[in-house]
Amino acid sequence: MDAYYRNFTHITLDERRRVNWDHPDAFDFDLLTRHLSELAERRAIDKPVYDFVTHLRSEETVRVEPTDVIVIDGILLFVDERVRDLCDVKVFVDAEADIRLIRRLRRDMRTRGRPLNEIIEQYLSTVQPMHLQFVEPSKRYADIIVPRGGHNEIAIEMIVAKISRRLAAVAV
Image 1 (spheres, rainbow, N blue to C red):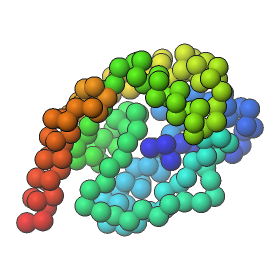
Image 2 (image 1 turned 180 degrees about the vertical axis):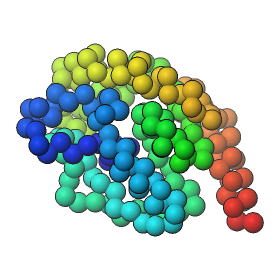
Image 3 (image 1 turned 180 degrees about the horizontal axis):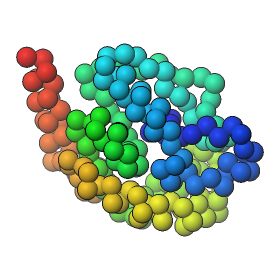
């Protein structure tokens, strides 16, 4: 889902740094749902590439060919009804708040080149409040909730089995 952030080319980098990237309005759900629909109709798409340093979409795209199984991830996926309707199996991976914060700190420092104080400020001002307002309530739309942040082998085996059964039914 990270590839589908809105492309705020009309504002400065400083203004883009102050955008609430954890609010559903930061995403281009129209493009995401169009791309998911095209993949479901067995048509390839050109997925955007998002640059987290400049907070803009790159000029390049990634060609995604349709397949029997399409996996999409994003903490705000279930907020949009159109996206939910396009998902055959909706999985919510539930992780403790401290684990989410540690993962964000590591990711943003390593791959996004952000300083610690900026990450903490963003977490306190937007990430945590948006999680409580949008992410946490959206898990009610999940078919499966995986506790322990995905480190749950039984839940993962159940998801794989469910997908395998669906694929077998389609192949018949």
